[in-house]
Image (cartoon, rainbow, N blue to C red; front, side, top):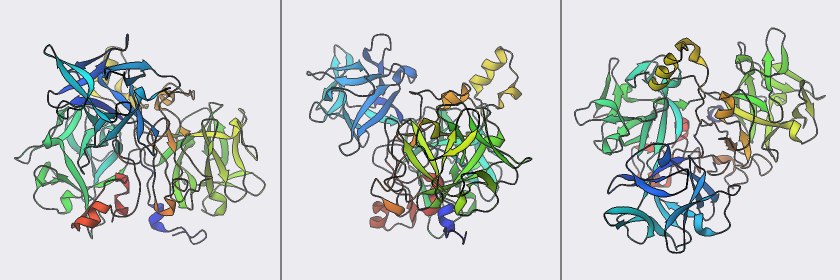
Length: 535
């Protein structure tokens, strides 16, 4: 509790989820277990048994009211389209938009429907023994959206103070570390159920599975019932959530030696889910390769081209659409702005430590002192404050992900003579963090404000347009008020839950749970890292 500004402690426990964006998927024909693929050289579409780069697609929502979306081929950036006869083809993207409805689709419970063809399904017809993708009214041979991105989290056992880990060889274990091997991806199955899949972030083909004998293991690209889970919070228990088998109804547990499946919930089957970036960010200038830092030896706020611990900040929600920035260096002081616009660091979380985030048309956000209306500004040489709203006052929030390395990467780097110890730097994963706090007003964050792409981070810093980004979304402007949590899935947007489901609330029980009256609460549209606020 912080009496001076009246912030409720529960509100300060709200975590900003780390969500991959835009959502990626395979378009899978489950009856024959093939995937829609595209040749990047000529844009032709075909059916494939592979699950590689040519088979990956991204979903970019164009209109949240109608649900109209673009489906972009990840390898070529071409847009999936249907001609007047219902034949499937791809066309070049024109600044992320199209002139007609040929490339617009609606996704409902993981079924893809063409807007241009009165919502007929994306399907396939049998042509001389081969399946050809085509818009069709047939409900049998239709494509389903198989999501492969989601919310990135740690799964910690409160009873053992250890985290689930998928080590360098892809084997499951428990670890005291908070590194990339301990980060897992929660993926909404997308079929309208509460089912999720849990995959390793580092080894993205490794899927958490269980067998009927109670054995827990990882399998490559396993998408059967043994890989489906339900994450729920037992009522009256605040220590964690339960991870339940969707098929057998048993619970994932750790007994101190190994993973087991138990028929009932006890302390060994409770898991604390937390965000993968641990609420840590770099504050980067859009027009200069500079970050805000704090030197505790000189008690000085400065601007630097580096990305070290001194440039890392923890961001907390403080209510009413406001946030605070706390330095990650030892002693952790808050960034404050005085009446005269001077930037300082203070141990005290007072009104001078509160900041408002607003959308900037320059591809980022404005960071504004709530008490004095000064804007953080970078002139290329140093850090200052200003009353202007320009590109010099525009910032991007870079989520700080833990370092990691996969088995294949380890082998590759050994071949070229790089020591494993040198791989503690962040790998160029397309990872996003998001901030979607409570109570933002219409003048606060809206879709379009950016966070720096992981590609730019890993390559040394330029903030290039067109990279993978995550943004801030105005809750107030979305009509959700102080009780809501919203994400915007799409071009430059975010998703606030896993897979393709749009988050609509951080707190409160879902309508499904209210109607069922079950003995546990289960997330259907909320961030998993905010399980403490499920009802």
